[in-house]
Image (tube, rainbow, N blue to C red; front, side):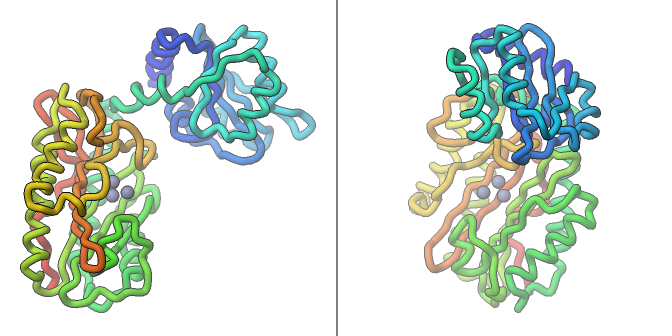
Length: 360
Ligand code: ZN
Ligand code: ZN
Ligand code: ZN
């Protein structure tokens, strides 16, 4: 599995003229080395050479974890300077064009640049992201199971005595439910009630859920490192006429977005079709974010479902379709599912009910 990934990345390195990659701990590192390294002031780095070979530079106290990768290790002690060792390896290998991972800290990059003044530096993610964004069947299975567990939590949320509960208390309950479902842990939980729901990344607080509130609930947790991410909006007591109308428009827009997904369609086209439905209802100015984001080892990763994107969707890509409408001072509505692109369209990895849930 790791050797296939490395082979695909090496092919792209060759095409891009990159001689080596230097990756700090993070999703790209985890994807290629097969374990999640610890990022700290003691540098751990994976170096991949285009013409073959890879080396992990790791502080002695973290060497046991790195051994799992099966890659050659250079274990450095507190008396050594790891940047000297990495620079020497790059020089020895005659690797003048170096791709740097997004998660390598700037202080480490600046240190390498000082040591290798003649090198050319570029962005490693340009050769890794296109590989990472096509998920294997094992990755899809983890994402599917994580999605099903998030769906199960939604069912449990709708059975809670929500009226009067604070946003923060509901966040705590959802966190406990995510763990009880057997996810690795809590990725994030966001609850925005009433006017707070009009702020998409609202910081959940002391506001109690009250009758008449629309409540935007967004959460997820990883399984085997692969994320889940679902949003549903419910209403405490009867929803007002405007709330129901906006909800239906968002629900239809989400449906339109999901139906637009198939191989070869541009990501921007999915955003445009989703947005057009909200625009036509006169709500366009309140749909203030992109239609979706990829997810996998990271909660937000390519491909991004954004109007400007001409990137063609391909079988095995996994991303969210999550239109929302946020009316300042009043309420918000968002509905989010994760989908995986299949030969004929897409499969939803979230299947919790999308009709408006009214909590009596
Ligand atoms: Zn978000
Ligand atoms: Zn979300
Ligand atoms: Zn999302």
